[in-house]
Length: 490
Image (cartoon, rainbow, N blue to C red; front, side, top):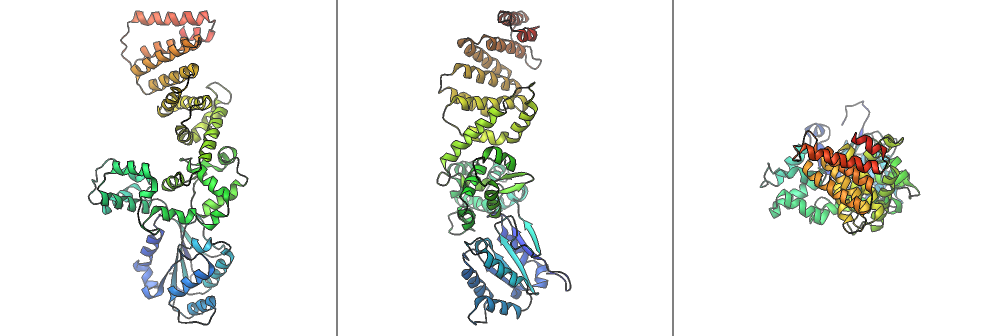
């Protein structure tokens, strides 16, 4: 693959299952420039996916090379055959299988190094991993990533020709599977066979998960089998905490840092770094800058009830609540800037975890209110506060209900839904009055007036009515001797 006199570079194609490593490798081998150095007779494909031991790896090499030498020692025969051959490129496909075989790595490494020493042999490896095998070998490593939106759409529409290219739900469907090459192919095939539109495929995928992606019996035609090659690998089975860390990271859709894992999410693991290393080696966890995350289609696979422990979900909900109560400061507090930054970093993870909490609990509600208040101050959204209100309807906690309604009203203001916010402010005031929280009720009254006089809202109340409400709020604050409230009115 290089001109005479140049240093050889062996190729290692890395990435999670389903990224298209084998397809890419075969396309590279078929390229005109490669064929100039290695015509088809000098290209050897060695499928290693079933080589679960040293002996099976040697058998696979033996078969793929079409051996002419049979002297009783498989490795010696292979080396002798390679040394006597013309220049060859060996494509060791799915090399993670022998590399991660239980107790075999040192011997597999020895075999690879022996072959690498043969001057006219070039190695081309595909591997479910984030790092190349055998330190010291001059690898040209390529880490395959998810394809871009345009390419994903093209693959989908090429397979599912009958689909409507202008279907607005197709991008959402493709993002749902993370633009992973194999998942797109399989999803498009399901669509083609069933005639389902993108929204119907989205609904079915959310209901059934990765099981809908292919009825095939091998990793090229079944997403579950493809992922299981990493999930059930001997390397992972030897490290029980790696499974727990994978489940933890699967519940954190936007990813998180090593520091946050150690301090919060995986604080109970005895060897976090070791577990993280195993997950990176099997390419079940990706890294972007300082964050670690699980690809969407692998998340769905891991979170399937048949594989996911309810204990992890319960623990993650508890930790999310602890995190929020630790960072619940208000504007003006000395720690607010630091707390707000921490909440912003983990906001997507916290929301995903807590929206899956369905058992009403005062601590959970308070945590949801901390998150909703942060969102009200930064980027107003209703999902978290609406979930809190839904849970509160199963409880008798009027003070918390008032707090939640008040936060909801403020969020609606931030979304320019002024009429709705007035209704909710009124409900919040009623809840506070019921529990005799007069200062909070007075604040609702004052905020009610503020909304009515907002320039963006065409109020229906007369100026005289608004002045009456202001005077009522002032009187209530004065009766409470609430200096801060009185200052707000004046």
